Structures are given as C-alpha cells and as structure tokens.
Amino acid sequence: MLVKELRQGLRGKTFVAVFLVLQVLLGLILLTAGAAATSQKAGEFVSQVVFVFFSLSVLVIQPLRGVGALSSEIRGNTIDLMVLTRLGALRIVLGKWVAIVSQSALLTATIFPYLILRYYLGGMNLFAELMMVLMIFALSAGLTAVTVGISACNSILIRGLVPVLGTPFITFGIFGIGFNREFGNLIEICSLNDKKETFGLLGFLLLVAHLGWSSLSLGASLIAPMAENHSTLRRLIALGTIMLAPLLMRAMNAHHEVVPMLWFLFAAPAIGTALAEIENPVSTIYRPFIRRGFIGKLAGALLYPGWPSGVIFTIVVSVIGITTVPAITQITGPNIIDAQVWMLGFIGSLLLPGVIVVLASSKIKDRSATFILLWAAWVILALVMAALSSEIRSEFLLWAFIWDPFTLIPMSETSGPYRSFGFDKGELVAAGIIVNTLYLLILLIKAMPAFRRIRSLEQETPSE
Image 1 (cartoon, one colour):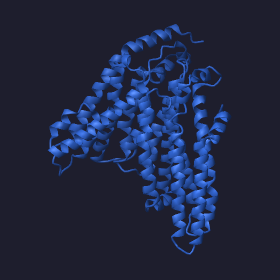
Image 2 (cartoon, helix red, strand yellow; image 1 turned 60 degrees about the horizontal axis):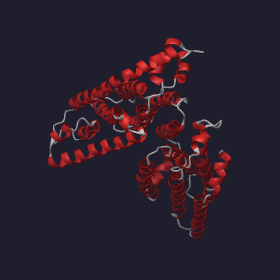
Image 3 (cartoon, helix red, strand yellow; image 1 turned 135 degrees about the vertical axis):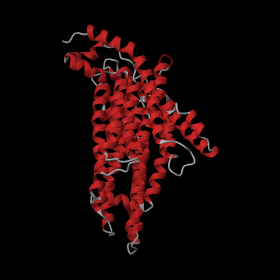
Image 4 (spheres, one colour; image 1 turned 30 degrees about the vertical axis):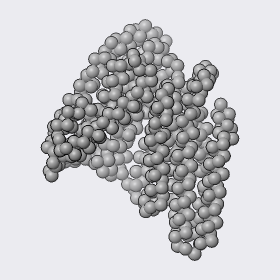
C-alpha cells in the first residue's frame, strides 16, 4: 500500500511541478549570486531565497496534498475494503502520511547541495542553516499529519476551512520572516548556542509531534470499526506530553503570558477528541482493562473509548494544568492569577462545545467536525464582543457573555491599575470556576447513564 501510494505521489503532476520549479528557481538564484559574489549581501540573500521557496514547497503545497488523502478513499467507497484487510485503521492513515512526507523528504534532500554551494559565498553558519532545514521539515511533517487526519471528516467545511484559513497565515509568515531580520534570529536559535533556545526547539518539536500524532490518531478513529480502540493510546500519550511540556517551558524560561497558550496547544487536541468521541458499546474493548481487576476498571474510567470517560479525562487534565503548570513554570505573584484566568478561559472554550455536542448528539452526524466549528464560533463571538465592549465602554456586555468562557481572556487583558473597565482578577477566576464547573456538572449528569451501561458491559465481558 505504501509503495503504491508513494509511486502515485511521485508521478503526480503537483509533485513533479513543485520539484522542477523549485530546482529551476534555486539554480537561477545561485547563478545570479555567483555573478554578484563580490557583494557582501549576496550570500545572505541566497539563504533567504532558498529558505522561502523551500518553505513554500513543504509548508504550504505538500500539506495541502493531504486534504484529500482519506476523503478520496471514502468518496470512492474503498475505505471499507482497506479496513477489512490486515491493515488496521492507524496503519492506513500512517501509510497515507508517510507517502506524502517521503516526497517532502525528497524535496528536503535536494536543498542540501544548494546550501553547500552557498557556503562558498561566505558569511554562512552551515550547521545552523542545516538545522533550520530539518526544523522546517519537521513542521512540514506535522502540518501534513493535520491535513491527513482531518481528511477523514465527513464535513467538507472542516476539510476545506482549516487549509483555507491556515494557508494565508503560513504564506505571509514565510515571506515576513524570510526577508526580514527575523531570519537571522532563527538562524541564531538553530545554532544551539543558547541553552534556553535549545530547550525552546525541543519544545517546538514536542508540540509538532503531539499535534501531528493527535491528528493522525483522530483520522484513524474516524475510519476505524467500533471494535478498534484508538482512544486509550492517544490519551496516554497526551497525558505524558501534557506533563512534560511544563518542564520544557520552565527550562526555556517561557514568559508567563505565553505559558497558558502553550499549555492549551498541548491540551486542546486531547480534550477536544475526548469530548467529541461517540459512546462505544462494544464489550470486547473493555477486556484488557477487566483482566487487571479493580485497578484496570479504575483506569478504564479515564481511558475507555467514548465521551463519558472523556469527561473524566478532561477533569483530570484541567486540574493538573490549573494547579501545577504555574508552579512548575515558576510563575509568581499576580501573574499566577493571570495564568489561571487564561487557562480557565481556554478550558471553558472546549467544555462549551462539548456540552452542546453531547446534548444534541442524536442530531449530529460528525461530532468532531461539529465540535471544531462550535469552538471556532464561540472564540470568534468572544473576540467580537470584546472589541464591541471596548468601543462602547461597557463592562456589562462582556459579563452578559460570560457563559462563553473564552470571554475571560479579553476581560483579563482589559484589567489593570489604569483600566477603564472595572474587572477584578479574583472575580474573573471565580466566574471561570463557576461556569466551567457548571458545564462539567452537565457533562457528568449526562454521562451517568452511560457509565451504568459501561458497568453492565464490564460484567458481561469475560476477563479471558
């Protein structure tokens, strides 16, 4: 399967066009720079152009090829035949991903000769630029995993919305960094001379790997039969990365305003997929837990597939984050309150769509797509209300939308000793706890009948 996918990809018009255009452009740039080798800026300009065109190839064009990776199989009614083979759902998704990433690796390999030739123009940190190429390739692999994973969604809106919204930001970012002094700053970071910056790169790689794995695992869950359990491994890996991430944040001395956002990037995929899963009635998936007796059943309450155990998982992750992340990252003083407000806002922004998806589960066909759309809608609503309240100088407008917990974040940003609004950080923490607890109680109440059904399945399932 992998060989077939790889051959088809290498013969594809898109890959051939990207490969040839990239080689022609870089060849012309090197010839031009060689003619102007007396200029001190020639070498730096060549590096910038090489990285800009290479980044456009592997960070924009290659990930977009993953948008139809699984959806084409679903539309062609071939995905069921693939699942019935010896290939599991995860292996099918990984095969699609590896085929595209292998093509990106080929494009990456063609860059090294140009960098070696560029070395002779002078003023180059060869190790740092080679390291930067590898970082870009790692990011390309992560973005490709995201597009391949969401390609399993039934909603064409999700499959198209994420690439359409993400592509302009990535493209503008590439040009903005590639032809400005930020390029030199990235080269300095990739030289690994500073310990904190080195841990920052490790944190970046961990985040990319986590988001990529979460996306691929989600894609596998969407095409897998009910008897396959992809949730347990996904949640265990998520717990490991969520607990490791604060240690890296502390080592890189992350700013207290950045810590909640980084933690959210690690926690959001795990919480979102856990709350968007369907309830799994297949008794055989409980057998590995039942074999371990009481401890296994206790762990199952956290790791069983389905949204009921996802509620418990969300509570555990949220409590760990709010109580330990500020301490591990050494946030002190009033900054602790700021971090807690932000984390409560982020967590609540995931709980609200989770509640809606659970309450309207009988009317929703694609829970994952609905969850993502609802999350985006509530975030946009909170930002619009914050901008509007700032214009009319009204505190009440934001308090009226406190049921959308993401509103806590702009409310926190408008607080301060010289604020025109009268938000108190303690009040924001209290409001966040109350709203989030209310949503968790709703989820727990709805999960109670599901837990009783799970207990019945546990009793019916033989341990051997």
